[in-house]
Image (cartoon, rainbow, N blue to C red; front, side, top):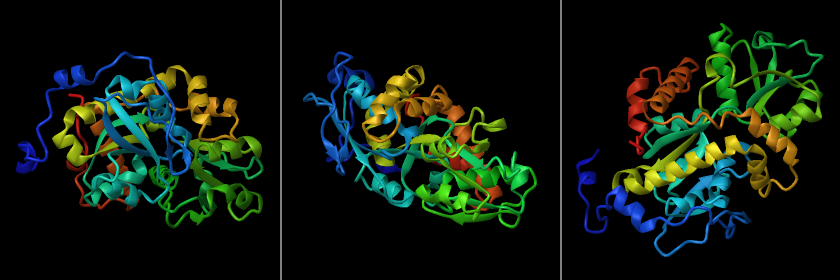
Length: 348
């Protein structure tokens, strides 16, 4: 902590203790409403009472793994914790998103650990406060390809939507762990996500890797074989989606960072307990999606696994170690020190 963060400046008053803050902003649980617009898409912003703390939360409205975000708005979890949250559908690059959070254009965001860790290594002032869930990345092949496991990818071409995508990073890591060099033994080819299926049909690639809902939908519509996913082996209980909060908010208004984290964790558990209802909430952002398929996707994710505290910090360090093996994170980076720097235990 910087010395300037230990004491409030005149324009940044010290926040009241958590108990007082909650007393002043709490309200009866259960009230929730939809309203407002964010970038032309439906945004969930609860009708604020006069004492609610206003925040902007950035998310990807096209990713089913972010379903707990609209759940938190529509089911009243934000308001329960005294928050008036404006949801901003952010479609820019990860660097742009983290810069927006770090500079106060947004207060927090939800995204993929395997995409965020490298930019965070470079110094963005964003603190990870909780894991949201695991699952949602899959690697598929045609049933005629003969590819039934990761070893079958040696000498093959794999289509991805982005050379720095979480799916590309994850499967490169898992290939490395079984002795296959992801750089020399596999050819990675980039396509727009909606053309991955066509590339596979044309034989330009022999496998494709991406996240839900795109990859799930392709598996079902094209009757593809799921070679692997990010819930296999040691990753069965590893989070992949995380909450990041503006560093200055954590330091100067810890009660608000705590309230936001608690609200999203409650929404995540609600999603795990009520996947069909959560799918209906999310379907407002995916009007062409089949709600039954969205429900099945959520059931396959591990929304019941949302680590905090030391357990979450350990998972960050493990991912940093993994990314070092494939040259994404600098080999000289101390993973434990890195995890301690980018993590904030706001619930302690």
